[in-house]
Image (cartoon, rainbow, N blue to C red; front, side, top):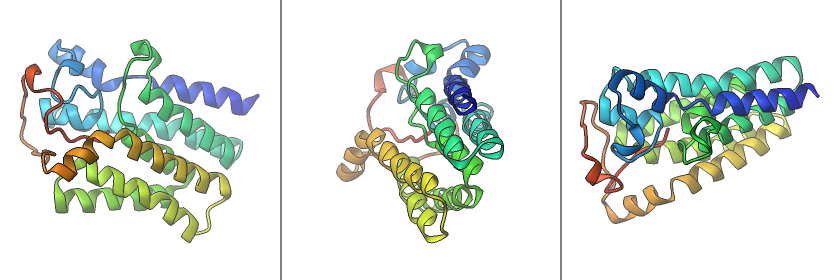
Length: 212
C-alpha cells in the first residue's frame, strides 16, 4: 500500500507542468504554441531565456527526485523506481493538462535517478553536460545520457530494479526523441543557443532540438 501511495504521488508530482505554468504566470502565453511546442525546460529556455528556462529544469528534475528518493529511502529500490517511473509518465502525459502531450521526460528522468541511484544519475548528468557542450544539441545529449544509464548501472552493480528502470528509461527517451533523430540524420536539427530566441508560432516543428 505504501508503494502504491508513492506511485500515485509520483504521478501527481510528475503531472505538474511547470514549463506551462511559469510561462502562463510570467508571460501570459502558452508555451505549447511557442518554439517546439514542448513544455520542458529546453524549449522554455530557447524561447524565453535563462530567467525561465533553468527554473523549469530544476522543478522538472525535482518532481522526479522527490518521490523516487522518499520511496527508496522509506521502502525499497523497487518502490523508488516505480515512483520515479510514475513521475516520468506524469511529465509525458500530465493530469493537469488533461493528459495532452507533455515533455520528453529527460529532466524528470534525471531527477528520478538521482533519487534511486545518485551515482548513476550523477554520471548520467555529467554525460549530458559533456555531450551538450561539445555538440550543443540538447536532443543528442539527452539520448546519449539516457543510454549511459543502464551501462553505468550494470558496471557499478546496482540492484536489478535500478538496472531495469535504466533500460526502460533509455528506450523511452529515445522513442520520444525519434523526430529529433530524423532531424539529426538530415542535418536540420538546430543547435542550442543560450541567448533568447523567441520563435514565432508558424515555425513550430521545424528543425527543433529539445530534451526536457
